[in-house]
Amino acid sequence: WAEYSRYVGDIFGAPLAIESTVAFFLESVFIGVWAFGWNKVSKRVHLLSIWLVALATNLSGLWILLANGWMQHPVGYVLRNGRAEMVDFMALLTNPFGLLKFGHQILSGYTVAGFFVMGISAWHLLRARNRPFFKASFGMAAVFALVASIMVAVVGDFHAADVAKTQPAKFAAMEAVWESCNYAPLNLIAFPDEKNQCNLVSEFPIPSLLSLLAFHDSSAEIKGLNSFPKEDRPPVLPVFLSFRLMVGLGTYFILMAALAVFLSRNGILEKYPRFLRLLVYSIPLPYIANQLGWIVSEVGRQPWIVYGVMRTSDAVSKAISVPQVMGSLIGFTLLYGLLGFVDIYLLTKFARKGPEEMALAGAGASVNEELTLAAAGAVSK
Image 1 (cartoon, rainbow, N blue to C red):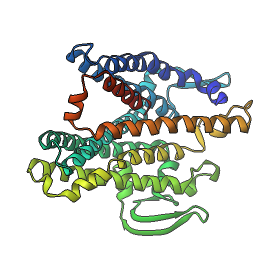
Image 2 (image 1 turned 90 degrees about the vertical axis):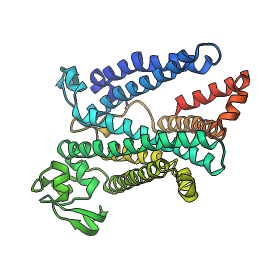
Image 3 (image 1 turned 90 degrees about the horizontal axis):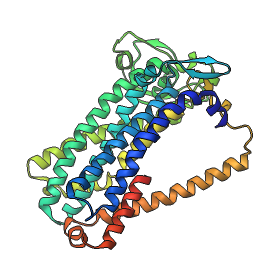
Image 4 (image 1 turned 120 degrees about the vertical axis):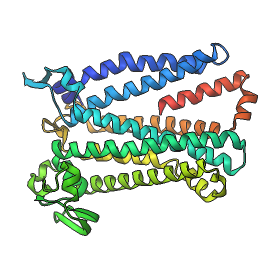
């Protein structure tokens, strides 16, 4: 991406530099204290170190997503001498697109965490292992997941409304709207036909709801895809399907978390083993929902790498051949695939252990080494 770096490096590099020198440095230092500090530092210092890692991870997310938010909705810059130059750093920091994206993504991560802990706790409860411990962890995770999943939907609503204003072509693809109209309905069931520029299916429309959701005005105009040149439209089908699946999964998370809180608070959780089993199978779903959201965000931005400013086709390195790009892609895919496999293996290994096994083995150096590997896997993820 040499041309991209040359064109917008003055702006894009600033938040990433701050992320590297502040947040990532903090993460790397204190993950080391946590990983290698078992039985070497006090319990308070050890606990504080992992909390600082969590704080730094959120800070990393903030700066990275502010950078991505600028790519989605560029602000605070001028075009000078053939490149974009920053003139207002505060505009980048307060860019509503970036801040909403950060809130939506971080809360999505919290939803992942809540369902992960609920699923692992449910797995142990199904086997009647250390019931008081895992009932407590389940109850805390259920409340956490419920609050996070509701807030994801709330922030996501504001984020989608901002997309409607700043990226109308993406919003039209998200909802498969082909013709501009006021009082736009929301079709509960739809399926786009990009070739013929229409919907094969448009069923159960709710009058004016799409206009109301997008602009909080039932009479507002929603721009259709046909109002944009074909070369400026994103691929419709992957954006539409990813958005619908993401919203469907988000609704599922709220309902499941609410039911989990109800059953846990009323002490009847273990009377419903099928529900517990369903939660175990639901562990990967928040991960999938996150990936679907990124498909909406990044595929929906096309054909722009910086929306309205620079096309993706103009951002590539001109001096690198196709085989070189393919080779690096294969290499990175294999490397991160291996790291992902190790991460899943270690997470699964330690999730299967109850607190008794961890306590019995906790004094041994070999377990400390295994925990260090687990930490490394979590960081790589």
